[in-house]
Length: 489
Image (spheres, rainbow, N blue to C red):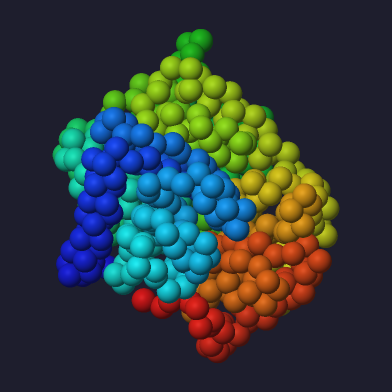
């Protein structure tokens, strides 16, 4: 669907206002404190703003966080920065920020659904405020990119990082896994600057860096039973197609296959998945691949989806500073350390997925949703990544999935919710569901229609799950559930 030019113009005007506010603070030699979320999109957004500020020789610091709460607001109060910039955070915390930080200049660069009433001291750039879908048309790193570009046209070279952030946020929802909407304008900027190449190909993690059989074995989107997680069976599958995994002594990556071999592999995988009843997942085999031209071949930064996975790994494993440094251009020690973190993250993901699958009661099917009981075993910062993977291979894809992990030291439970377009098209908005349910238990929730989260007191876990199940059912029946604080645009 084509974007409305008036809406785009209004949105871009808001990014220009944000750029102007940042430049004014820098000109006055003010200190800028940037806060961002710990996922790939949040880290990419922080990296973009960080690089733009660095080029201005500005005084700034970047902090990556999981959420905004009163404790964080109190810390900001004590630090007294001249400007606070929130990227990939803020739009769901308008009331809290207005209450606690009303004397501060605040810029919010976000793409989550907006909850609360805007305060006078906020400059708020968010696509939802202009009728543009922040779940598929632009992510926070894209918002940050347009702000950086408005600060200085030279920042167009940060466009590939915004592409990485959008893919990390799973915004490739257009035909054949393509980025669309405002993301398409960013892709166009990157291509025009010869920074990005876009091709149609088999979409598998590791197409640039891993031997073919390991690429097949490590794929989780789509999840292929009997191949995902099974290197031996992946090798046997390739052998049955007469596709050689090695050229001499060197392993071949997916990028090394001939067009004829790729067609053969794609056809065989489609037949195999259809035989397993995975009709929906077959459409995820072929799609648009985004290649960063200036990154070296056979590295984790060459393919934009792999780059995003690396950023996500650094955030989820408490090493987000490495991800920000890589986005800002460090290809030395930060990248080396980030690759080590990536290897550990892969092992952690595998361990948690194995744990969930080990006992059937760990994934419970209710009337309208699936629930994964992560409890005290799964790290709360990994919950979003695990729920995204599991939501791609549910027995009934028309039911949303929620997953939780307890954060004992804070007395709260972290929830992550995921679904697919089929469900949102029926009227289910997970951001709204999680917000309304969390507010019933003095918690906080929100996000996107297709992916959302919440934090609630540990003692309310079971009643919260029950209410989410009920609210999803209501939306499926066309009933309203909305909170008065939920801004609809």
